[in-house]
Image (tube, rainbow, N blue to C red; front, side, top):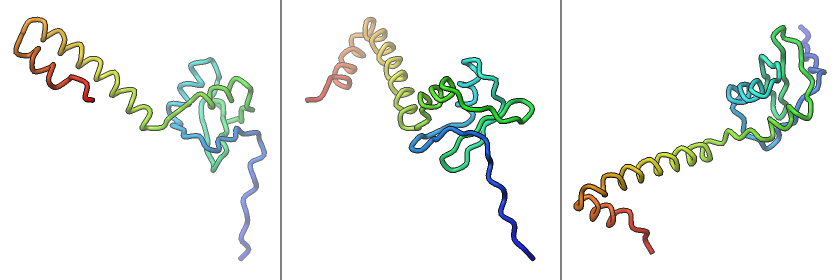
Amino acid sequence: MTMMTPAPIDHPFIDITGLTLDSDTLLLELQAVGIAVSGLAISGTELRMYDAEGAPIPPTPETEAVVEAHDASKPKRASLFEEQEDAERLALVNQRAQVDPAFAALSELVLRPKG
């Protein structure tokens, strides 16, 4: 029995070396800027795009810019969510502190910058 090696995919790709990608989010980002992409395939450090019929879409400077700008690193995304939540909490604390002197004193102790 002879083992066959699959033929290499011979259409253009975007090199994603060093990038962290979330393919679902990236697909939506590409579609949001008007790129008619229906599917993505990631193989090692290669990203390939496909249209609705499954035909390959060659990379353009626009698609490469979207991929480069995409950042799916979880720590960064989590940090952004935490910053927004902290801002919302602080707004609630300040609102409550305006009508409740005890709450104002407690929030001052807890929220005072350390240093």
